[in-house]
Length: 375
Image (cartoon, rainbow, N blue to C red; front, top):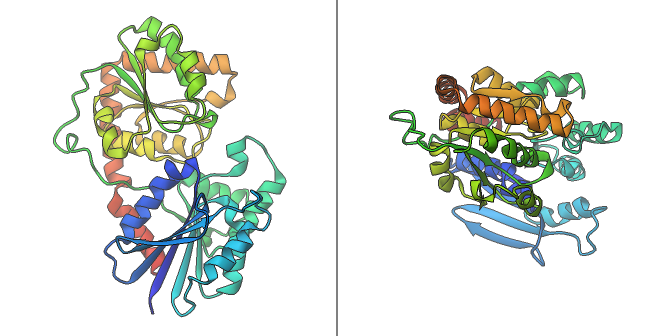
């Protein structure tokens, strides 16, 4: 019997960054595995009507957003559209990646009871929005009730799902991200970081805490004049961030969105990477920095904190527990202390690279994911 994997994504900025990177990982995992068929389903597409495209042995289905912009019956209607493309004679695996797909998961499991429904928990809506909503938590718990397997990206999320959501441990699999080792320089020797640069990579939105970093740099550049801040990414905060740089524009570079291969040079030349996210389930950026042996300053939050703490890859600061002014000052202090300590920079960089090789390679990720798909 053929096995057909349906990978669900949504057209959103998150799909361009973290979840988009995760989808690419899954596609790379399945590439060349002849016992699988693969369909990528993009929901909330800007296409005017449903489109089916085949590329590199992968089928892409683009299902447009509702004409009236309302989501009330959207996922039910998605099922009716998708039904025409699903073969009930195959072993079907529906792999969800957005919390908004609860109703779709329920219908798919009801109509295809022999299918395998998976959910990778990339985020919690409550944590992302900074609210403690029982209604939202119950909705997420209900979603997981329809799933055969729930994939947690970190030990933190694994324990949270058990303790707060009551999900049976046997239903949860911990499979953190894994990325290919593209740092050719690191494979021979540590990068020669001759320039003095602070590097931020990610979306330019409030959750990512990039506003704190830009404000903190106003304090940093007064203490360490030869430092430069590089901000790689795009998003709604860009105009406001540009204004925050008034007085030190010449020391801040906004590159816009860069592909991973374009980021290689920046990862190899930076002095320190900064991840000030107010909430981060785990993050590809952290792994990319670790793979390049780049020391990190990060917010002490959820799975990101677990990753850096175990890896001994950098400095953690509890930014969420401080008012914005205090958080900005503490972030500036942590960065200054690290960039001025060459021995600690070397130690964190070496530990980061070592931990990546031990725990977060693509080979390990592929092996774990195929074990679930072949279950």
